[in-house]
Image 1 (cartoon, rainbow, N blue to C red):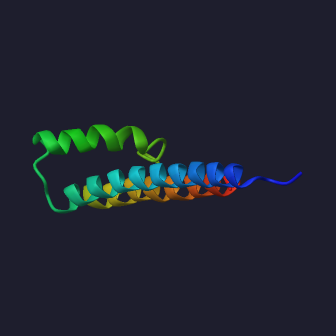
Image 2: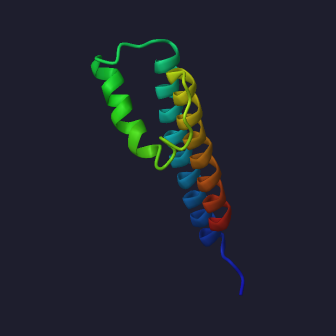
Length: 97
């Protein structure tokens, strides 16, 4: 069975969308990490908005490791989540291609 050009482009488009979603999720995690590293005001509306997006995307990573330093905790927890989203969506995109 041959795959027509339209099927290939549809599968490629789906793979690009999945990759884009993974990148967006990772960017949200990285922005939250940067806000914490740079000492953003936790009471600020933008900080709360980014946190409301980053917390659910962190999945099971919060509490996985325990560090004395809060900044280290945030870097490891949300950094692992960012890497997780890039790897998982990369694998899904590869399957779609």
